[in-house]
Image 1: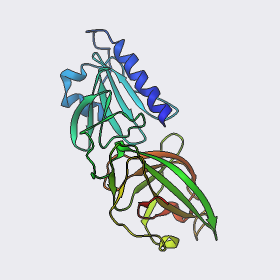
Image 2: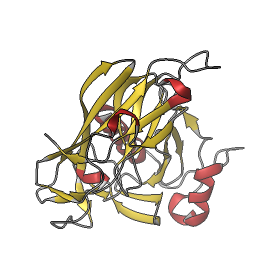
Image 3: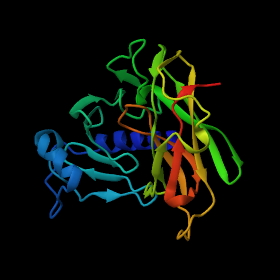
Length: 262
């Protein structure tokens, strides 16, 4: 994911820098869906289209060149933005916001660990932009698989966790795979419930996800995924981690509360 984000950032910068100052609008091109919404919000900043929206066949991401820059849609988390190569306008959970390309809002994915706005304060909730996520380990018993995932606080100040994550399985092209998330229960009842705790700078927290590999009645196949999109408690944008999942019972996964890392 980090490599893909870095490549996209470089592509955005190179393409935006090559846009002519005031070229004519291309014939028959148009803005649609999220790009149309963003254009209508800031038409003078986005400018006119030079082409129709193009999609990367590998991951489904969308790009569209305009007379002033580049529109970007990231399929994995439905992120929509416009950049002129220096500033980026993002249509996110707090409406339209603008930042430098060298910054990230607290709610965004931030694999390159860029400066976060507003500046993190010690004791704030652990936000997506200040976290990274990996799979810590996997084990199985009696037809149930247990995957433990590890958050790392990438900030220079402590942050706090409390509650359960959100989760959505994805395939290799970032298409959603049927997912039913159950908080706790099943074999996770022996793990701690939700409680507020502090993660020091550079410290870690974790949660466990369990699923059955045994098909139930009327089930002929189990959904298969190669990635998991995980939204930290009370956050908006997911962190995406590669992992092989094939939960039976129609994509049912059980998640524990986030807890201090052992």
